[in-house]
Image 1 (tube, rainbow, N blue to C red):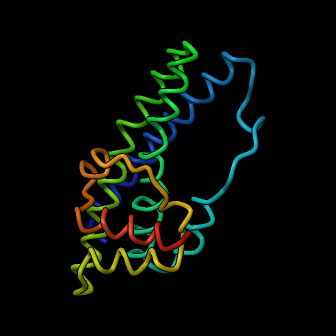
Image 2 (cartoon, one colour):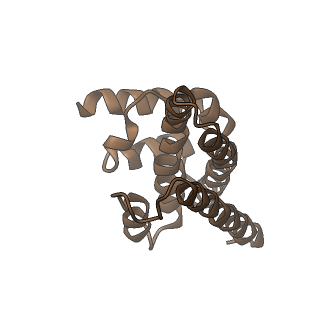
Length: 167
């Protein structure tokens, strides 16, 4: 992969470490620690599943699973705002804003991989989704954040169709 690929992902890793510190500090202020609550390891499982294929990794880690965070974070922000937890809202707003950029980086490198293989990004993405992660396809979708992250209207339509057919 070109040097820009590595530079982009080092930047993402730096942001993610900062996000972890923000969340860790917020939990500590509330009397908790990371690990006190159950969590899933879906990103890690998908990273292992796609470890041999950069194209699949770019489609399914940032563009499927991390994009799901774009969808659910506004609802979390709204619930926290209703409880008056402005500090947690501020943390999640930072993370949401930066995650749009992370998903956009995934889009850029997914498209690069598709071009290198001579395949259509939109149909390739939707084909990859047919076999995995249907739970991550359910709405509602943060259409504006996904648009900013490089999702096409065709991809958004395809995601909706796949999600509706999964149930």
